[in-house]
Length: 169
Length: 169
DNA sequence: GCAATATACTAGGACATCCAAGGGTTTGAA
DNA sequence: TTCAAACCCTTGGATGTCCTAGTATATTGC
Image (cartoon, rainbow over all chains, first blue to last red; front, side, top):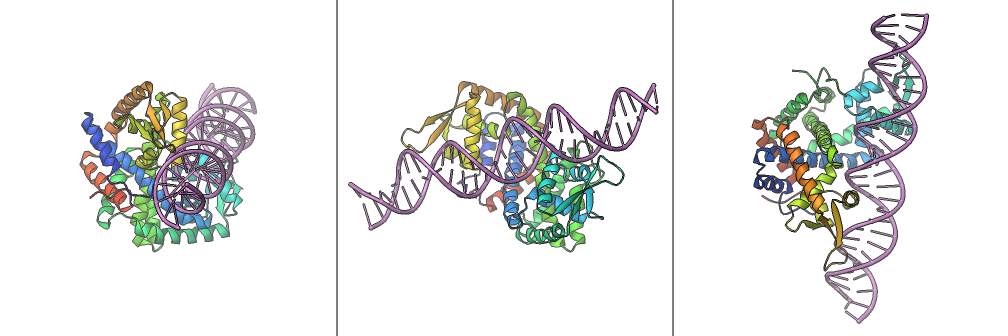
């Protein structure tokens, strides 16, 4: 897993697809496979950067979301929608963050079904520090060429809109 | 998770980053976050398509890899390297595929440390059928514009090369 | 006003990924 | 030749994701 392969395995797969008469879907297959691999690489880098804080990316995302919320708190279902993960994943993340003292659950003032997640002081501090580290250690050296960035962001936004993530023009 | 959000949450995050004075890394942050979300969407589609075969994407990838191998068999460490996943993940996938009768483990003829994975007849059949379904149900409707495809593949290949996945020019 | 439906969260289970550690096999250097 | 280092695979543990089902609270419709 550490040694570079002599050739791009995804380009090889694309050639295999073409060789088997699936030329019409070889390119999307390659694009999708490349997305998978790219995600895996990026996630690994992020996890390394967050490890010193005892955070995973899932937990960090929740902390970051809370730190941008006006009131510093959010209903769990809102967090689930914004992070676009299953509600049980939020439950899981909140369990661990709460155990670590970074967030607290509190009842919603008017809706008895809803639970609010709130940043603690320490959670707020950790969120700030983790963000600083991610910015300098991961995002600032993403490995994407500056000249490709806007294009990449647009292509992925088009994809996500088409997939029903959001409706904005 | 089903209802589209009124606005793109990643674009919002990008604006948050800029507003906090992290404008220099706002774009890569957005690109990376978008990769994560895109991967999640695509993986979900693939898993749905593979479910009727009792396969997951991880297992399918292994089957597909084997079906393209000349001899129909591969050493586990080779599969790990080509799929670019941890050896234990291969062990896990082979365990389940073997239990399902789609592959068999066999000892390497000359190296006692190595285990070969081999497709069974049924494994070969399932691999073919699953590939056909993925091609028609997922890859042929990827949601990426044809005009973006080459660009996307190139950007991701540049990234993966830079990340040390392969050394090919 | 009350029953039926919808919504919010959580518990339990299936899978996948990685890491750390352990046991067997090869390789290579003294 | 011998023994340490390198390599291969597996086991066990921690996390994350999703799904299904169950409990509790709100909302709706008759």
